[in-house]
Image (cartoon, rainbow over all chains, first blue to last red; front, side, top):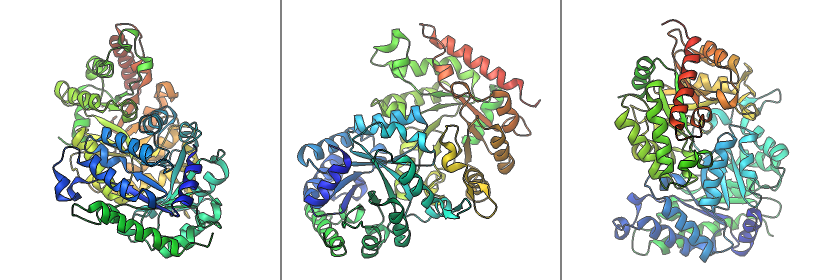
Amino acid sequence: MKFTELLAGAWAKNDSLLCVGLDPDPAKFPPHLKDKPDRIYRFCTAIVDATADLVCAFKPQIAYFAARRAEAELEAIIHHIHEFHPGIPVILDAKRGDIGPTAEQYAIEAFERYKADAVTVNPYMGRDSLEPWLAYADKGVILLCRTSNPGGSDLQALEVGASRTALFERVAEKVAKEWNTTGQCGLVVGATFPQELARVRAIVGDMPLLVPGIGAQGGDISATVKAGQTAAGTGLIINSSRAILYAGQGEDFAQAARGAALETRDTINRYRKET
Amino acid sequence: MKFTELLAGAWAKNDSLLCVGLDPDPAKFPPHLKDKPDRIYRFCTAIVDATADLVCAFKPQIAYFAARRAEAELEAIIHHIHEFHPGIPVILDAKRGDIGPTAEQYAIEAFERYKADAVTVNPYMGRDSLEPWLAYADKGVILLCRTSNPGGSDLQALEVGASRTALFERVAEKVAKEWNTTGQCGLVVGATFPQELARVRAIVGDMPLLVPGIGAQGGDISATVKAGQTAAGTGLIINSSRAILYAGQGEDFAQAARGAALETRDTINRYRKET
């Protein structure tokens, strides 16, 4: 099934715009898991199983796996999500970006090896660096636009061209008007800049926006939802990682994560339009 | 030893600005290797051993390994270079770019797991996304500036700010004047735009420039060297991948690669200043 259809299905079925980010850091795991050889797999699948009916997507961050030679665990976790929670898309957060022949290899990594439903990609190298990703017609390709970190403004807020729009707005325009000919694209727009999120939404119509930065990074949920939702009250994939993953430190950590996810989903829903 | 010192040593010892890019694609391997289970390791180490006295660096492209679950081979190849060819730096071409906590994980991947001497990084997320890399004081951090692919102009050539300089020039300015406080940075500047390479050189002083795009991508060696070299006739890491890796298809493929590397190194040297 196409990523966009999976996403729309999960938005509706779970009444949720919440995405749980899987950033497994064993140093933060509950004590009873810390020394287990399969700790990353056990931690992540426990989180997944406890929250799968509350989310519109899961977003594993590949860096946390690559730092610990845990590629096989990442494959197994994504397989677990697809097998036991069909209908919930997996967004591989990899922020890849390279020339065509190399991007082809990265697309094999993301879509054939890991079987992700969507991937995050960096737009700096331009349109032809996207084409190998878009060649996978069912997959989602979510481009960095406006990021929520302090240095995000260093380049993204620069005014470009005669119109003096910010670089991130130009990225949104290019994706919406030129690059997204197949309807596969989405954008990453941080929650820490709600006014800018509203400007991106105005440019891109109903395109899905992946929004990191609530929870640990401090973005405001009310402002995020109001600025970013579509007329239908969807269009957003609002990510929370640490605030959910590490909500508890006991043997019941997964239930604590479920509690945090439930509260976040419901807080988000409080600000959504009636649908 | 610091990356910059390794690089300067290799420039001098091998009288070479040539970097051999390790982009192993088994479909292009010589027939006698294609079906071997350790084909990637055998192919790459044969190329390395045949060319190590002709290069200033090796640049494995991680995507080619990740697409085939060949992370262990990549570790072994880098270990092989360090063990048998000490003094030749390894640049891990990964073009990573993410917020601080995630960049820390990527830096563990590149510098602790793979033990690369330098890495390529994408600047789109700004200064704080670089800091975890720069925390490894001996390592090189080579940022994308002006790339050699057709879509490279989509964002990089946009005019920014009141001064109407191109975005890639602004990146060069930011790195040279603000971000490179520790002397660890380099830039990627494609060979297909020699005039722009000259503009970057004028901005960044003696900073190392990694230049892909000669050989298969069509950049002109004479123009590249003249535009990019420093007053000392160095400052460049001129990469060639496919034209060297796949110079021969016989059992003597490594000797064919050596021949191609020797010719490329000597062609580059023909246009260098007397030192």
